[in-house]
Length: 314
Image 1 (cartoon, rainbow, N blue to C red):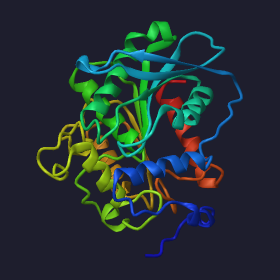
Image 2: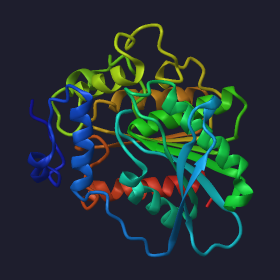
Image 3: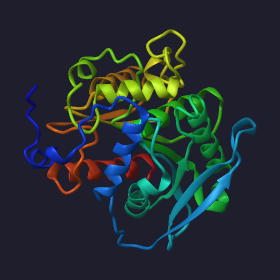
């Protein structure tokens, strides 16, 4: 099928992986290729200090590694942000998303805690989610030590990280855990049922498509569970019946992304639940906006920074 891609990304399409993404090894190779492409480089204008910390794992599970990013110079308490990386539940490391976390710390002026959660299929749901929740609990408990304002703790993620961020927000509400002031859900993976028009239609787009999504959910949930009544809303937040009482949200979607319609639907449902919600749909682009130096890529980054600054009260 022919798509009206943004003209600035068209020359790059031939360099993008296009599948078939039929197994976890193919998806992990995709992640490594994205890192080698250099799309994630970033040099801050201010000094950002980082340190790795091992925090208590959930319910006797292994401890969780987090990396803390903070401006070297600060005046008083800063907002805190738990950042959850993407990777289809099966790939990704803190190091691969170092640029994103550094950018947020520098341009928002926040203490960012990036979490190294366990990956599927070796560690299926709820392992990764519980790691992320444990990192949130540690961040809130350690707010004074980290120089974080406890009333300004948010959560953010993109792709699978956006889906995990939405799930952590649900858990925090239902467990009466740390109070979140904001959630940023970038092109989030939210629904295992794969029934939306965008999921059905975009099985042939490069970078990430409905084939890759199927592998992702099968790894995370276990073979045979996808699309069944046995899937928890904490695994697939689109299944949650009650979205009331969640923190204000900023949600992004891309025109030629299989996740487009589930992201739009989640934003609508949050709004109907009286949750302050902003939604931005980027035209002509694939999953995530893709190219930072393009006009739409710069807009995606600028919108993220601006949304986080508003949501975290900067």
